[in-house]
Image (cartoon, rainbow, N blue to C red; front, top):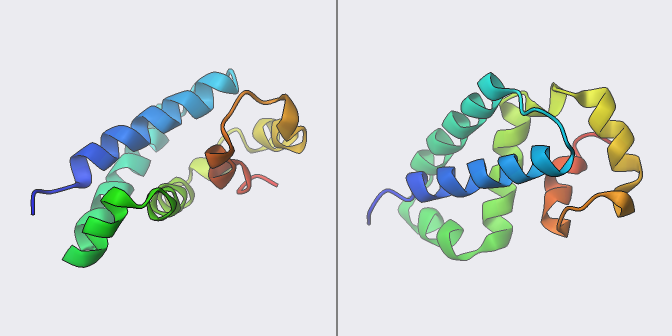
Length: 106
């Protein structure tokens, strides 16, 4: 099976761009790069069957994204600002999937 880490890394990076863009915050670039590296390492460490499942299962994919977001330290950056924004979730222009990130701030 081809290495799925690159398409997942690209998707994760797009989600991070959307997340910070919609919150109108500059992404912490070093931490974003670290998060992408954490994700790639996590995907490559998965057994073959699990890698296949992640490619077709959005719930499993978002769980990996959440773990990489947290493990990389992104959940500690802009913490006060994002926690305040997350309290009024309805005012944010983010799809529900982004709650995987926002819930790390509340």
